[in-house]
Image (tube, rainbow over the protein chains, first blue to last red):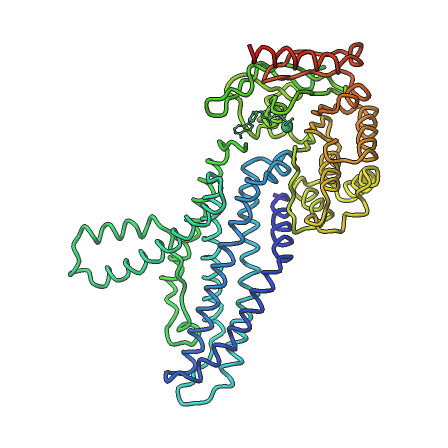
Length: 267
Length: 239
Ligand SMILES: Nc1ncnc2c1ncn2[C@@H]1O[C@H](COP(=O)(O)OP(=O)(O)OP(=O)(O)O)[C@@H](O)[C@H]1O
Ligand SMILES: [Mg+2]
């Protein structure tokens, strides 16, 4: 199992060196200030506006970073043949896939911790500067649940990307299909919730199709800003089932990816 | 004893048959050259030996075992034709990655890494980012990563390519030193004088077929043999 350490090490080292990594951090700080300014022009409840914006930026940045970085990792390894150097060292193909996946488990955790801290601290400080009758408190525990869920979801996205990289040879294609999976997964999830609320008014065929797709496609949603502000309670059962599904999905993709990669020609 | 046995390998990419029954074997402790014109199938053969791509038929044995056996790979060092590394890290960080993934003992690993890096004259660049390496530096670093785990068998795809004359001499000396230490080296090249200078035996591959196995006594004639074969095959293609 020591080899996993090596992959975690190289994934962190490679990505922390990226200039774009710091770019993301700086731009996120700017977006926090931007959210604060937007709040001034909003007629709604200020804390909520602030939380909505900062959360949207957070999840956008997390998903985009992971999408780019994961695509740029394994698909590039294979296209540029750096994978030869790893496999020629007696590291099996299976270990390579597990290693890459584990590397992303650690990297996504680092990413969520960094941006997530900025999010919570930023929201807390900015919210503290807010006055008014509608002002809400920031609930750190709720915030941590949101971050945990975001971590699981961006890891899920990286497993989707890495899975596709086990058999697709071109990194632009991997990127594109990953985006499609991300969008399809999210839309089907919304549809599924809509369908489950409006059960009577929707035909059985549509209902079954949507339900089927909901279970086949990964879902990427997380408890949102309302949980951070305590406007919505964390439904422990719902959240843990959702996370469990995500983890199972990542596991399934990893194992399937391993099986596919065993047969792959690395020409 | 035969350390590497390649038996009647065939391989097609699409409709084009690139390897048409390649057979040869490399003995323990020798330096074995693999020469052939561009596109003859040298790199393809090496990729098959390393199990990166799979032959359509035939067999490869490393240390008497199937080449798909992962345990056997730990005894092999490989230098690809165009070594490409993770560019955002330094040479030393890449070595650290290898040390961790291969679970090698730390102090011994760095001692060896230091020794070979100095020998290959890449030690001064280990703290530079790999993206800043020149072509020759990449080639040298590629060699370093191949030898650093002190494998019993080295498979090098054009180890001299892109190197200046000093670099080539360093590589030749390194290969000879490895041989002194009982290692086996199998390498491909276009530089026939190098074959003559450092190889014990060599084989010539042209158009996916091994045409000649050149024993040590004949190595000084390898240039003639090579030219002769290329001419023959070229003629045959014209006719
Ligand atoms: N992935 C691939 N798909 C299709 N054809 C390939 C592939 N790889 C190699 N070939 C073809 O196989 C033949 C042999 O290529 P190979 O790289 O093995 O030659 P080589 O002997 O190493 O040549 P060089 O001296 O130029 O390195 C060439 O005709 C090449 O076009
Ligand atoms: Mg070649």
